[in-house]
Length: 112
Image 1 (cartoon, rainbow, N blue to C red):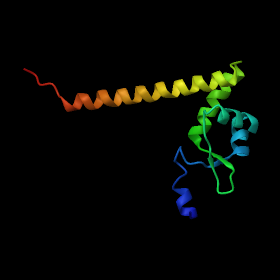
Image 2 (image 1 turned 180 degrees about the horizontal axis):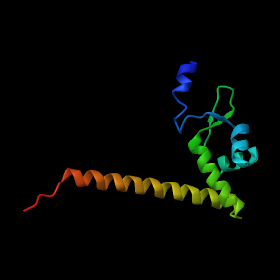
Image 3 (image 1 turned 45 degrees about the horizontal axis):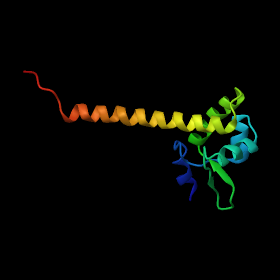
Image 4 (image 1 turned 90 degrees about the vertical axis):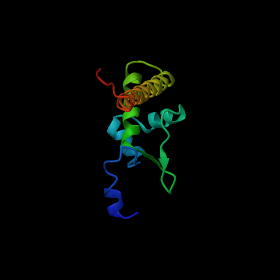
């Protein structure tokens, strides 16, 4: 991958741009926390060629939400489950909105 290829991915929320250390620093948490939410299957970081964990901006947002819940006293396993359910609900709502939008344009009503 060339530098030009990498620059094109700067806006990609799914591009694994952050190392574990940088991700932990950005979230104000420990690397152990990131490992724990990985073990709970909240996020699965990609691995570099050397085997190091790499996180995307999307994954960091998910991890930040889990951290909020843990900071409020929610056990980490429960926090991860809550975040998964919130994410699934948001996706379902997005799909439902898109379905309604396309269904509305597929069968326009005619005035009589």
